[in-house]
Image (cartoon, rainbow over all chains, first blue to last red; front, side, top):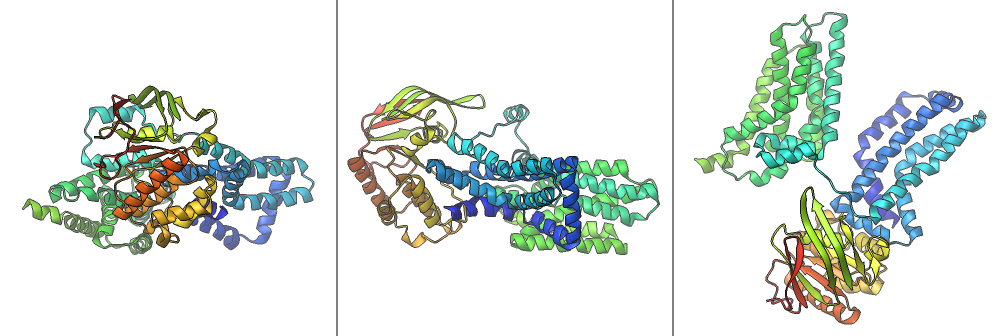
Length: 363
Length: 214
């Protein structure tokens, strides 16, 4: 049974957060020395506020694991896992505990590591708090999972405003992806825009202290628009869902206009924030070139999977190398306008190809 | 056998099901209804997957008061089944078999009836839609459910499996007194003739249409 738990609940968690763990391992075992870890653990061990903060961080991780497993359990594909409710109580608890324990392993190890120093330094109050955290971090989520697999599945309810929109309006095609995001990946949208805003803000700070040429702003635009990669990948997925409409007789220009409008709306926050923070030392035309470059860059990346049948890994590699190449390109100070035009051509060429079948039918 | 009392299910403001009282005795029952009438929701409610107001009892066991004991007595094969993509059929059969206390003999019987042997070690992601359907049907028969709900069971699967499935269902009815609730749009008179009654979902309520499927 444990192999089923690990396959369905634990492994997907580590797989879904592989990038996070790689960065964490790199920081913990690459950048930091063993003595740094010991010093930090000793500081946490003796200080109550630091111990509380560390527990808060560990609890945030446990919350993340809980939300992940909860989402797995309510997903239609995982409905069969609800059969675990029919096990003998002892087996059911083991099943749930194994799932939670295996995803909790990193924080449990760290808690034990800190507890060692707490015990060695006689910080027994802090030791007790960590000692209670270990069983609680497994038992509390398991209790909640139990309710989830015993009772009916929670239902997804649309917010009132959305229900009114559904009732009163026929949604134009360029808004479909926006509704798709709002319904299914609001967290992605929020995180993307947060990172994007942080990039724009961080690069604007450079200009607050000194005057630079357009390349710093260019790098800021590159980072800000690259932060939209999760949305681009989501759009590729959405395009796959929309394959069913590919044979609908829509003119190519209409399809192109719809995609362009969707991405224009999605990038409005970047356009506005960049306008607000744009350094006064740079000419205004640079703003339009940077925004045009960012917009065309996103449209081209949206289009690339349709030009060739990339698999997911190859696509991520392509994104990575594209961004690194652009980084170098900007540092050399080559024309962004040229690049924007090139990206626009890639987008138009790819989209016309996408609708070619339909255009022929129209003719 | 299955007693439904004051079952009410709403989505947003729309009432999908409103069944004041209904009793299904041992036998086979067809649940008909137009698209969107609530057949799948009805199955999800009585199988404890979707929440609703009211209660269901199987042989006196209440879904709300004894959810685990209740769920052991009922099973569902969905119209479009989905499973975790990386599990194999072997994983699924062992897992559900353990939960529903199915013996090795029964697992072997189901493997043979649905011709599953060649797929035992294949992960779900490599299966065809017919394979998914056969796996869902096999899982629904596992253990000793008193009621088996089958949502569109006659679609997708091949003829030999369909024939075996009907023979198996007949055997379960005869030997174990299992009741079957079946929703289907397929003209299945040639495959399944002996419904004890045909019900239709009309205006959110279950209405009896006939004692024998026409």
